[in-house]
Length: 274
Image 1 (tube, rainbow, N blue to C red):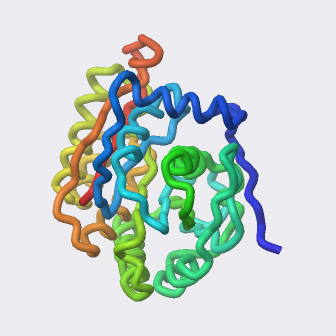
Image 2: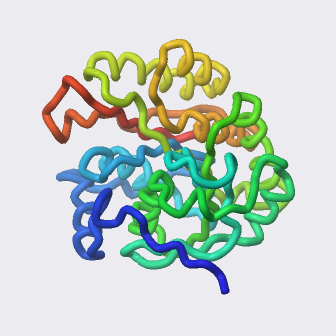
């Protein structure tokens, strides 16, 4: 029997009750009328903090995206559980807005193309970085499947190779036009707002240039505590292999927008790769 992964952080990172969750997501549109033009994208970068802190940044990206049938979400492994490169290859994930089915044929294709990936559920059991993105997609898109990949410790070449393997798998499956790749990452953690903004925009600039090596170098040299830089590198490599030409910053803010405290913030960036 296919495994159902229950939500691990509903009621903490986002509301547990479906109505409250929908109302919170709707509130991120603010007073503006949501854009009716849905953009064709290959990939995106989304934050994964509690919705009160980063939900509006993620919303600003997801609300612009054209519906695709398949989603690959790459998130950092905060728990340290499971394999370094863990893919959940079958089953479904439950959120307050319903179940999202894993695409087993796509997951198997990626497993066959990448020596790095291991079929593993432990890395996903309590990990929030992928889970928090799902209700946002469910709010806009009702009919999609996905593949979750938790990225643990490795080196630049591993992250780069993972992205190339994902692109190769999508091409071989003929799904490159029907799949969106999402990298889940927050930016600088627990520095003052001025420092966080400076560091984060160094990383953002590298992503805008589609330069995964520059992103890696800046994260290391500037000590940028971007928790999902590895998923972002893999996403960039996959997107470029699939023909990406540019990346756009859609929205950036810090937790100070929610808390008013600029002395210790977390940064959040929402980006689209086309």
